[in-house]
Length: 425
Image 1 (cartoon, rainbow, N blue to C red):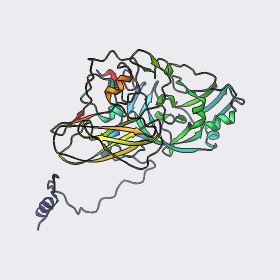
Image 2 (tube, helix red, strand yellow):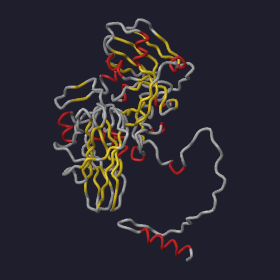
Image 3 (cartoon, rainbow, N blue to C red):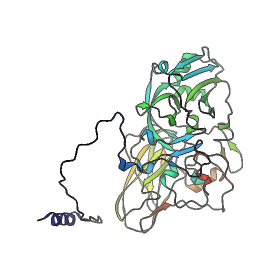
Image 4 (cartoon, rainbow, N blue to C red):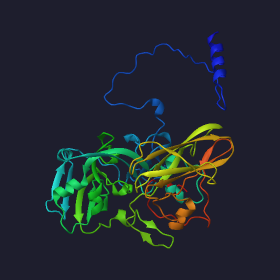
């Protein structure tokens, strides 16, 4: 049998079920490869993976303020590569010489302290796996009508998971000695916006990290090099990057990021401030918006997370919410970390809508879009965690399947936001 006949016979033997195997000119026994590239001091991705990039909205008035979305539909696992971790900046990325970096702790403390990086890194450290999520993640859920071309990345790409290494903030505050009236810690960054957020003293003493490593290496500049805060389960804007100052005080700063931004409007017009904890979320990343599938077997895959603790369960519907099945959670399932879920599924070629909803260990359930807007105003900006639906057309195209809201067009959106996405339309 010659090579052509062999390949055609092999293709016919492999054609089972709905699978389609096409005979191609391919030698299963190629000659030995040529000498490859030499050793390199820093590893690089394959050039065939160059398309896996963060998404930046083309409608940003300036790339100094905005966000780059992690390509979550192209990633697996619960720890994301440092170079693809989502990015949120308010005034660009500062360049900080680690030899000149200092952290000042002052205010309502017995002993004001100044740390350089070498001294900080000599302190007792911990490594923890946590997600960080921008409060503006999911902001496309406020669109009305929903945008059909939405992808998983643009829907929920302002979240990433990593292993963070640093010194517990508790140790530094105990070293400084808190005065009895200490109630808040005001954290300030070294970027041009001098970003300031206020952290209650109980949270500061509980689990906050002063981090200098991400996935084992030094922080990337866009993620806070040389030092940032990691505040488990709370919105990203409070996890101050390029950290330079911690002021212990008896009241919050009431900064721009705590008043005009990162606040939530209720339907009656009242505004909630200090809504820090990120509520349960999930999203199916495959199949998802912008992809195309063929009839046959598919493993539905996705991500879930909650700022209230571990994910207890993820339920998936493949018939538009009529029935639900419990997905398998991939180990490890960690406290305030991303969790992978999967569900085996056979698609027969009919049009349908697939959805997922997360349940955390505190009993919080991810709401539908309608349920979310019964709680929050439609001209809001932040903390959207409504269920993301994907409509699969009969030809296999996957589109945004979010249902339209009753009541007509949404009122004008508030100014601000993270990625500029809500400005597209």
